[in-house]
Amino acid sequence: MSKKRLLFAASEVYPFAKTGGLADVAHALPKALTERFDVDVVMPLYQSIDREQYAIRPIGEKFEVSMGNAAYEVQLFGCTYQEVRYRFVYSPLLCEREFLYGPPHSGYEDNALRFGIFNYALLAMMQMSEYAIAHLNDWQCALVALLLHERPEIHTRTLFTIHNLAYQGTFPSEILSDLGIDEKYFTMEGIEFYGQVSFMKAAIAYADAVTTVSPTYAKEILTEEFGCGLEGFLRAHRKKLVGILNGIDTEHFSPQNDTVLLTPYSDLKGKRINKSDYLKSVSLKGINKPLFVFIGRFTGQKGMQILIDTLPKLAGLECNVAILGEGEESYREEVEKLAHAHRNVYFHFGYDEVQSHRMYAAADFLLMPSLFEPCGLNQLIAFAYGAVPIVHHVGGLIDSVKRFEKFDPDAKNGFGIAFERPSERACLHAMAKAMDLYQDKKLYNAIVKHNMNCDFSWTESAKVYADLYDTLSR
Image (cartoon, rainbow, N blue to C red):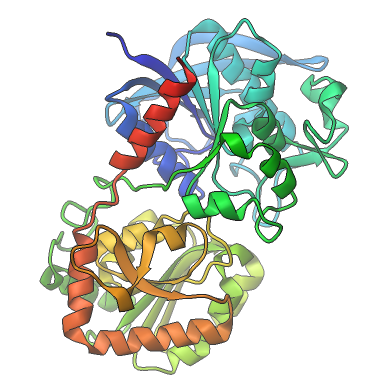
């Protein structure tokens, strides 16, 4: 029996282009689905992608997409990477930019047009080839659901995943004509959002199923606190909303096979060797002191202000702190000042995949004071590398991090330190717990060993997605 064809569309996919966790999901989930589906992963061919490194070549498909009164040339490229088939959409307006979405602090003003081209190109691919399912990820792919609604002759069913509701793809209403979208859709029940156009609303309204990246976040976004203005609209469509917890690529995030580490490891002895190596490389001293790390985007969502407020007090303890990330300049300036003021704080600004792996391997604790967190992958990676996560207990962090006070060596889930309120005081209390836990070597080591042996792969979640695809395409 032939496999059903799946078009998996995302605006970024590791290793080709990455700004956040979406790229990791769009890399790992399709790999886990290939046993049951014939998968094409589709993304834009940004100018930053190294075509030679990945042997990305034209596949002989050129066409025009029409939006409004304009036509845009599109060319398709392709490659196979880690036994997964990739298709790349190239159009100059979409792809010839320094950044994926725009410079720090802002998106490109013509992002609606740029990703409109991407959506129309995806539609054209469905017209050229029969796909049973189109899995659309975040606002950059969301218009496809509406475009398919206009073309009943295309029988592809759609599943839309919300990775972060805070980024909805909202644009001035004047863009409708440039996108070639009928004004009849500009209603509260359609794509109108406080006088603007919302790409994400289009998918929530017209996709056949909507998922988000953890069960708890699926409940949270129905509330005013986390709904970002769409809570009422989501409640109206809640029957097709499902929360499925993300996994990680356990081949890529594997301390036993990680070639960027000084010593790949599967035990605490090997981890200690990597910790010593990392501390030397960044001029931090004290192998026996706990190492706290933060790895992530410098945005309000990630709890940067909490981190900045607590950092002086944490640095005053017998510990080391290492911070890696990029994002808003104001946060960068504050962290730089604190790093200069404290010898036991190291800071590197910028995205660095290799250094992040070395930090996970060295860390004793991972800091995740996120104000909200749809799922989070950092805590799952930390588990795999033997770092205990310290998290604000919200969203996917509730689903994936269980309190160490209730440690059960027979449990399937990972354990960490959780605090309830997103405040300096609560975070400091959690850090104090971490210091105490680190001194209790027997319990700390038992938790680390347990976490490293848990299964955080996509295996189970991919089965849930696959069953949902089958249900939609019957």
